[in-house]
Length: 395
Image (cartoon, rainbow, N blue to C red; front, side, top):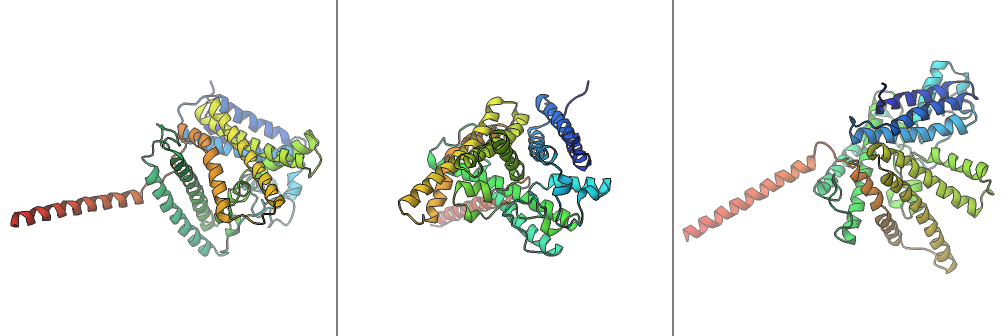
């Protein structure tokens, strides 16, 4: 009997790449159906021999890739003619089969379209053009994020709300505790993802497999995050934008046939985007926990983000109507932090319950430094006590 395991994600990727490299347009969606069928078999078949971290990454990779491949194999009429890398001198349809396989692999895994004709807007490309300068710069920042992640890990290591299995809620000790837990969660996630992105860029650029301009910054400019819309639309990594937006546009324009650029179409598309994001995150959660409630919480959380954006748009409208020209930046920061503090705990708790929050470095430099400082403090305290006793005896 055939056993379905997370390693079946490999034929999923193979089917998608072959479908993109295949020249016959009418049969291209068949490859998506094949890859979707294999991925669904992973979702519905239990495989307890694999740990939660393996399942988490398989679900994360699978949902991202399937989201992208639906656009490329189904919605895109002829990607070999319309989607090109900036260095291509001819369409992919004019390349040989092996070259098309390389083109298809690059197209599939470059989820933000850096240096492609479909690049996500607002990407921050590196300032260093030389390989040596780029590698040195990335290593420096990767080291900084390593130490920051290590520090956050040291803080959260004994936090019962952020350790598996959780023994208390994020708001167990009041509002300030909840704010701190939410901020620690985002710091942990950001430092892990940014560090991983930087180290992968260092390896591929150093080996000559890619160029520095292929690696724009993973996140936007965090000090510019003055709204929930900016948080999700500019500051966050944008890895799902290329997948979600065309699917939402298809739903609005073809299925619902809503008028273009109208208020109803704009906000329907907004909610459709966050609903799809919730679905893709729910697939990842399901692969780990096999729990319908926690999977649905993922969808609920992302739909709430659309409500938050709609609410702040309404507040901006009111501000302009009553004549307030500008809101202090600190107030905007407080709004973003407040919104995340209220809405994030439901999502964070599903990750902690599934043991998917183990992002701290395996080797803790900060932890060892704290141990050394504790020993020095203990030694100093013991020495002071001995000195005090000796003085008393002398008296």
